[in-house]
Length: 214
Length: 231
Image (cartoon, rainbow over the protein chains, first blue to last red):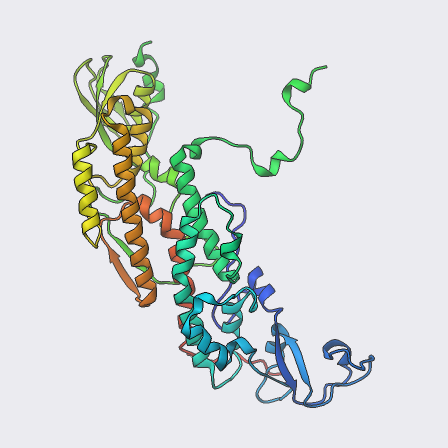
């Protein structure tokens, strides 16, 4: 109820939320691409390390893996600096896997920011964009049930097995569901009106009152 | 111990807050709309269970006091006069306080009875939609009355079990309707006869999920193109 800090959630649309930590971490993920023109003296930054001393240039057409923030900044249809392709989980083959049954996929392994990253990919002009957007939405909808059931029913258990296959967005939802459940159970037991020491203070190792004299 | 001695200062100063989310008695309608909330806020319209319990304590319940006192005038209204052995209606917060001080005997509300609750539970299990509950705060009242006044309520354990069964059925129905709401991607759902406690347990989760779904859905319509930077 009284929180000192309200975290800013990820912007799931075409624009990221500037202040969102999730979005910052998400934009660090790499995408495959190609250099459309020669990039002088950038081999040390973008090259794969093969034969790169500082001062080499990246030849035209070589394959690169660039983080999303850089790709978004350099993407321009008029000045062709780099061109991006889709990572494989957003391609046709994986899209059919998702539409068949999205519950079995380990979204944490596939890049822990599946939804956010996928929404950002729609920024690049790509003829498959509508299908990508539709797949992301459908995946979310089909996994919703399982998240709801597991978060609302696992009280006082080890939930690591349940969250292992969820991506970050789903984990945040899972935590919200858990919180609702825990608050209710805690209230029902009567612990809601008990005053407990804050976890921040418990580790200070304050001396107890009786130790202070003598 | 004269209860009148402290009453002038302690009770007269009490004022019941009315927080957001307080609805009228009886039907509680909930409109769940899929919309974009401001980033980083707790979902509006949900509160903690302790807050719901606070609102529930305003409900009236009958007690039989064992002291006598004239009418007391509080900011929220008058209570009163208390005569030993004569039943009087007071808010739950006062009833619990008096009971803890052993100054009264609580009479359970007429819905808190084994046959009635069995009927309610069976009705709930039969219907697909939510049936009206005898009180919009049935869960909180059950917990409060059974914790503090179980000696005044016959068959307290059975009542607790029956209420819990009804609660479980309603929560299961709520989850089912949330799931079908999301699956069919509807924009608007109307659920009658939900109580505040039920809304709170699922509220944060559901509104966050719907917010995400809304944002993902707007990706499907690439309206205005993104701003491009020209160097």
